[in-house]
Structures are given as C-alpha cells and as structure tokens.
Length: 294
Length: 262
Image (cartoon, rainbow over all chains, first blue to last red):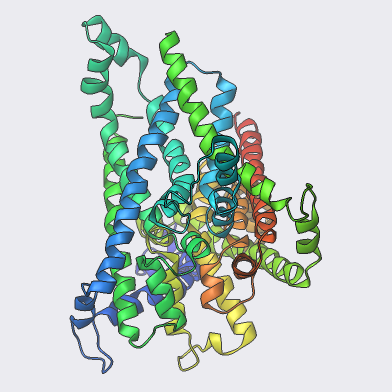
C-alpha cells in the first residue's frame, strides 16, 4: 500500500512517520515518568555520594536493622501469599466444583473484585474497627464468650494483625485468578481417570494438580509481590512501629531518619529486585499454565 | 455428593465470615460516636469537615484528569501498535506491565529525585508543578489497567476497515479517533477508567511523598487523630470501590451483548 514511497528507508516514509507520531506521546511519557525515575534509583543504588561506582550501599542492606526489615517483609509476604493461595483455592474450589448455586459463584467473584481492590488506608481502618482494642470482634469475644483478645497478647498493630489484614486482599486475588483455571479442568479428564479406576484423591494427585501447579505457583509469586509492595495499609495500620521494608523506605524518603540518600536507593533497588523476580516467576509459570488451560 | 456440598458450604461460610466481619465492624464502629445509641454523627462530622470536602474534591478531579490523560496516551498507542506497528507490541506490553512490578513507592521516590528543585525539570518546586507530577504519577499507575482495557476493546472491532471507511469519507486523524475509534471502544475504556478511579481516589503513598493534601493523606491524618471518623471514611471509600467495580461488571455484561454479533 506504500508502493510510491517504497524506495525510502522505512522510518522516513510519510505514513510510517505518522505511525511513530501516534505512539510517541506514550513512549515519551513512559520514559519520563516510569523508566527514567526507576533507572535513576537503580543507578543511584550503585553509586556513592561522590558519584563513584560502589557496592557499599547494597552491602548496607545486610546491616542488622535494614536486613531485619527486609526479612520481616519477606516473611509477611510469603506467609500471606501461602495462606492467601490456600484459602483462596478452597473458596474457588467450593464455588466451581462444590455444586453450589451459580448465583453464589457470581456473587463471590464480584465481591472478590471489590475486596482485592479494597486495599490501602480504608482497609486498615476496617480492621482497626474490627480487631482493634475496642473493635467489633474484640468486644464481641469479650462480652459473649469471655475471651480477652488483647489480654492474650494479640494486637492488630503486630505481625499477626498485619498478616490478617493483608489476607483481605490476598485471598480474593487468588480466587479471581484460580477460578478460571479450575473451570478449565475438563470434565472428560475426571471421567477418564474414573473409568480407569482412579479414586478422587488419585485424580487430584495425578491429573488435576499437575495441570494446576504452574497456576498455583505462579499465583503464589504474584501474591508475594502484591504483599511486598503494599505500603499504605501497613502505614495506616501500624504508623511506623513495625519495621518492614516499605515502611523503612517511606521513612527514609520522608527524611525522618534520612542521613544517607543512597541507602534509600539501595532499599528501593532491593524491593524492585524482589518484586521483579516474583513477577517474572508469575509470568513464566502463567505462560506454562496456558498450555493446558485453553 | 452431599459430603462435597457440605464442605463447599463450610468453606464459603467461613470465608464469608472472614470477609463480612470487618465490614460489619467498620459500619458498627462508624455509628458508635454517640454513647449508648447508633447514630450517623461521625458521618455528619466528616461530611461537614471543610478539609474532607477539599481533599475529596481534589482527589475526584485528579482521578478524572488521570482517566483523560490515560485515554489520550493509551488509545493512540494501542491503535497504532495494533494496526501499523505490531512489532512494538511486546515493548508496549512490557512497559505497561512495569507499574505492577515496580512498587509505587519506588516510582514516587524516583520522581522526588529527578524532579526536585535542583533538576532539569523542577516540578516539585511549585504547587501546580507538584499537582502535575502527581497527575503523571497516577497516570503511570493506571497504565496497566488502561492499556489492557483499551487493547481488549480494539481487539473486538475491525479497526482497519473502520479507519479506511472513515478516511475515504474524508475524516482526519483527530476526527477518526474522536468520532469512530473512541466511541467503539468506549465500553472497554470505561472499565479501565472505573478501576483507575477506584485506585486514585484513596491513593496514599504518592500524595504523601509529594506533600499533597489529597484524600489519602487526609484519611491517614484522621486515622491517627480521631476515633470514629476513620471508620466512616472507610465506609465511604468502600462504597466508592463497590460502585466502581459494580459499574465495570455492569458495563462488561452490556458489552458482551453488544459485541455478541461478531
């Protein structure tokens, strides 16, 4: 269709030029407000205050306080990812294979869409109102069952409290991702397994789980990244009393404890690295999962 | 079979309990401001608070602008990639995935470093510059959702024929986008737009780090200074999220009908 201009190099044909003009704003924007800021952080992590290349900043990540913050973050993310996958899987299995009414399935899927987006500050408030010192459930347990939650050492401003809160967006995300995968399990596979004499357990162990495991592991990685990057929920819930990596970085940027901007770069770089690895695993495993579940 | 149903019901019931209790707690707590009776006192105080009105309005306007900017950036890019530059597709898809991979706090940190008062583009130096930077930040956060929804919309229509038809009738590029392409992908754009709205309205990290009095920082401030009002705010935020996701579902169901002929 561009025969008249075919002799010119591709990019200089008027039509091609127009195409590039069409995508130029997008690339300009992405470069200025996504790629450059990120690159700045990554490069800064490998430089000292004089602009010389160094690995010193990254070394500080393993100092006791920063290292501990990363470690707690990873524990929190991993724990909520595993529990989110487990409970999300149970709920997804219940609504797809459990013989429950279709309307219930649709309702739960819609609710999962809402709950997985109901993160951040309001979620923290909801949990404080529920499991805080004067919260709904705290009072309910005390007045009806005589259980003193806070007397037994529980606090919403703790690792456990944060984990309980994170599950509120982790479980629905798992439900949303794994339900289509479960619905992709074909009835024929089960019938074939049963006609060959397999028990229900054997079907799951030898057929269903091998098909599902890339989806399961992939979602686990995604949930890990999801929890690791969550900042607002943690800040609204705990102030800055719990030292997890994003809160430490937030405090660094805010200048509360800032004496070394390059340490901030290094913390940020550490966070990118972890979430990038987790997301990479998710994308790779997802491509694998799509082989079977078409 | 009944055993299976029993366990499924049990799983759904326990899950329901976990998910509904915090909502109940939030509503209950928000109405306890007056001692000994249920009242909407906390809501009344929040809604009458000039700080609330100001920050909420600010965030609503910002969310709407984010949607407009997102559409302007993403629709032409997705269109040209689909029609003329298919080779760029992996690059564009990779870029639009990045905001999901890089934690928002890191992107905000990068902004502060690059666009501070001593940089080549000192956006954080002025009030309007900071507002603009926050808008750009939110548009970045919205890229994954906007791109995916627009691209899905473009897939369901025959953009090559539409383009040729419009151009043979003498339409220019602006007219083509405004009158032909955008209306045809409008429903899918809307789903991305509502998701963007739900994300931007209560966003905290960007606004706090750029020192902007948006709705997110206001909520956190209330959280550390008041007892009952935060729950009322949480109920409001939850209602907005519900409305946005509900509208998305409504529109996608609607669009399934309208594209079923193809």
